[in-house]
Length: 331
Image 1 (tube, rainbow, N blue to C red):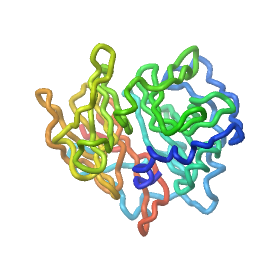
Image 2: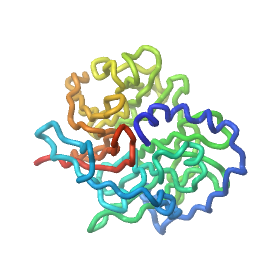
Image 3: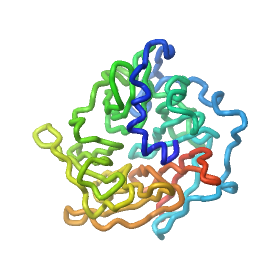
Image 4: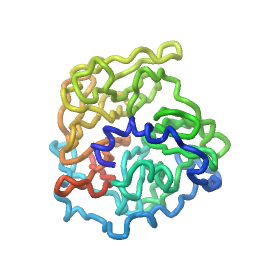
């Protein structure tokens, strides 16, 4: 989805309040033999058949605003190969620390209304696994009971737990849920354990599970979205604190914390998004620096420091599609 759409993503559930069982029947989930938590998924419906026939794949050569590195630390980004990227919309990349498993959010038509995405049978979270010559075929990650309606996104995976936002049958509005990898499948989805009054947007937890970073337009920010952090104390998430120097009057969001907790990567911008980074020194986040420009957003890093992110293709102020790119960290 475009960044303009993503800025309204957390209010789209107003469309879904009147959902009924008549919205569609999902296929019964199946799981691969001996799956790992990173691999748990169901074979996807054929997502590519719903990509509009007139929608050809945009190549980097045709890209009006190609993403660029603005630092000597990284090579210029390149798109991930098929089957990760298609002529549809690949968004919200999340790479596991070892770099071998990639999650993303897919929709066949980035300009389709949300109510169509809800019922098309293919929009949702997918997973790919590194192979000897690229990536495996896409697998749909199912986080809802068969026959029940849900539109899931914003996937974040840690160990055997996935956090995801969802507008789903039986609930009002867009809420955060978790699911556990149990007996070979994702199951036991339930509401996330932080206070809904915190107004949590897209989130990231530190490797030790003790800090919750998220963006929000909650009161007390500098403008647009700001990045906030909540500390877990005695098993309970505390009142969020604004990150201060990290934020700006522009929109700052979609945070990612590196495994060792020393770098915060995030998206800045209202229209043309950019990737920025802040370093934590002596326990304090420093003034952020721009890392990538030209419609680069939602960063996710592996332990080698390679940056996976979403790139949106625009022409004449119209968003055409979205792909997942990676920028390799130089030796």
